[in-house]
Amino acid sequence: MLYVPGCNRRYLEKAKSLNVDSVILDLGDPILIDAKEMSRDNVVDFLNQDCYGKREVVVRVNDFDSPWGSDDIKAVAHLNPDAVLFPNVESREHVERAINELDKAGGQDVPIMVMIESPIAVLHAEEIASASDRIQCMILATSDLISQLHARSTQSRVAILHSLSTVILAARAYGHAVVDGIHSNLKDTDSFEYACRMGRDMGFDGKSLVHPDQLPYANDAYTPKAEEIEHAQAVITALAEANASGRGTVVVNDRLVEHHHVRAAERLLRLNELIMELNHD
Image (cartoon, rainbow, N blue to C red):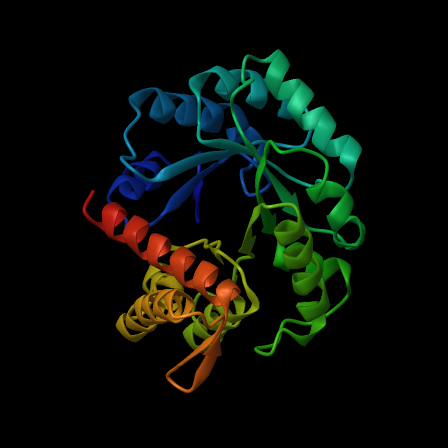
């Protein structure tokens, strides 16, 4: 998921051709105050163009309590983005207010995404995740979280591992997608690649990014490899054959396989199909 600042039309245009799954048209904190309204106008223009192909198009709005939040929602709700991303969500009440404001603005069918970016939001992750089926995705804002924890960014991400796991658990418990936070050091590609692979192994669905140069690393980490696809197909076939012969389990590549492994294998194959479809856009 690539954040694209609404104030820069060149970046908004470039995102049309990038190998990215989701573009977040950003009206939020990174936009200077003097550029807020211009950014909103730009994003409305690009939403009206419907120009991002199969890529998911998300709009991050400003906080409700800011001078721009309500106007952001009113401007984009009826244009049917794939989702509206709400920042600083910390409670069930925040989720309910987001949905209510979106509905009042004509976005009754628009899903929402929520940003988890503070200690209280992490502690309330289950409450937030359970608040509504309209939640499509929970996105970590790890840079904000590290600052509020008075912690330091390290390659091991030790300061936020508990927080990452807590939000993943909440998202999975209530059937939501969950996406890892950004990596703000654009030159430290080793740590970024490590974070992508760590996030994948922890269970994240993807990585949020702030620069196109980071895309190859994230795409490589989160795209199933040929050997993983072969193993998934073998798991499905082998257990089906075992079940047909009256056995509930089977060994594939020295690993015991049960029904939950088949569900995971089917998910991986479906993920690979979706990636291939997007890449042929």
